[in-house]
Length: 55
Image (cartoon, rainbow, N blue to C red; front, side, top):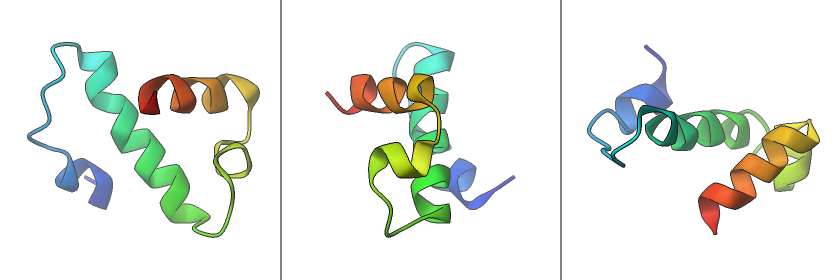
């Protein structure tokens, strides 16, 4: 279990896919703390998913 899983283990957004999104986003941003969201996410699909989650 990674640090992001531990941090968000009690999150409940009524959808397992949505519960995983903040974990993935935190891991990506944590790996590249100085990067923009697109820079940290890498692909356009992952970037769009991050923006949808944050919006």
